[in-house]
Image (tube, rainbow, N blue to C red; front, top):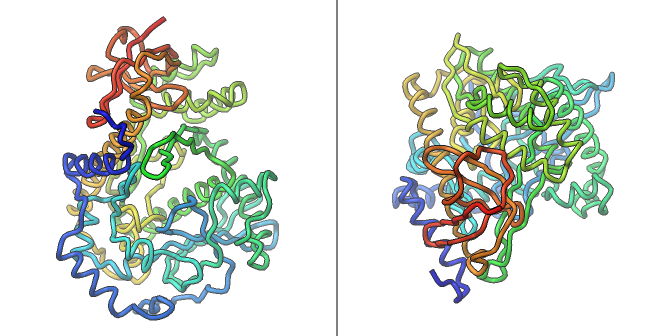
Length: 501
């Protein structure tokens, strides 16, 4: 396909819509959902767009926490803000961490037309040229988003963290909150790491700079403790397309930093607290699990090739020791090893845990109790969890039948996989646009997949994945090879290599 007209964005949008339909996902909201949306918006069109305080029943208390210095930290261009964080110093070197999660259920009712769309897709789909939101943007980026300087209902997960990063106590309750600073990962990280000045939104809020430094310190302690228990230090390369107007010009690599780690570590802890809270109330839950690695023997081989001996049986603590050693020895190429380990571990999935049962844990995070609860604007399992939480807090009946939760967990796993395939397909179409003028060039690469259905490799620079169609015999995940680009197909998202050298 000739893309010299430079209408890259329009081409990728068309490819993305087609991929959504081919994977059984809905790119558009139904007429019923749009009618319902208009009815939701109408009574809320006032100057402040502040939402009314949710109804209180059965003695529930909704706390007014709007004066705390809440702030959101997300990507520079994120508008669907799911969570806010704040810290409070406590006696004995303990710190109370509060995570406020948008109360999406206060507007999106179970069984509504909008909920039906969300239940079908189960996730927002983020492609290089366009986003297919799980909820209408008028909600997810406005009425159900924890927007700057707006009062919003929220579910607050409260955690008391010891000096060593351990969880000492926890609680969950409903509250009203206000976002006092909309922050971005990169600028906050540069400031925390001493590479940049304090961002203006932080300086504008009295005491927020000290509060964020406290959050950073606690998050680092929590991360260190998790890794001691076997949480894996994995750092993958994630690249996003960079456009100049409608023309794609390159790929920008996004890396972890101190700001992303604040959110990551607090959300991991909050999801664990949520799972245990539901269990304590004898409620079911949708657990997020990563089972023991499907190809542990290949992970053992990878470690052996680097002079490290892993045990015969899967062992997260030993694997983390190996990863820590390799990251220190070769930090620039650690993401390549991380990608290999992730591919060999296998994907995550959702399972329904019923009262009295015990679901598998999350091998990569080294936790036994884990759900998804902190992103209800963009993930349907989080919205389901929120409804379960609110029912448990209000001592109401479980809002889902047992059979429905089982079917939901399977459906959410399948649709998440479908959404990832859409995102990958559009990523590859965008990469094919970038590489179509470089047919015949040679690149260093790492093998990312080896199965009967095909062998895959990712270039080290630019970080583009394609299929190895020649010379794949006898190679396996994690091997470094040299390849030659022999074909691209923008429409299909195909990038074909042959092994050389």
